[in-house]
Length: 106
Image (cartoon, rainbow, N blue to C red; front, side):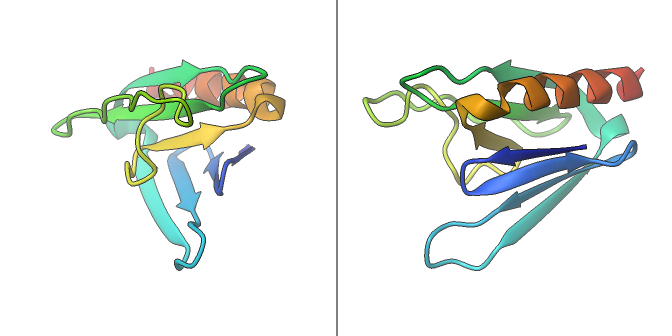
């Protein structure tokens, strides 16, 4: 199950969540989280004006705060390894991914 994000993607294979981020001029970075280690999820759907995001909460790691601003629209910073910004066309796929992860968690 894959979701295309803004400058990256997130996928879930039933056990592992893989977040891949690619910033302009940077090398691709990959972050892996076991679904069993996730303590919660946040999904803020995108709208016509702003991107949304998926964020995974992990024990022992404070969730990144939403950055406010005209161009950010209340998303965690791009440097947060546990979140990914999503465009509006990915809202449905992101909701399905979050539901699958929540089901796998228990």
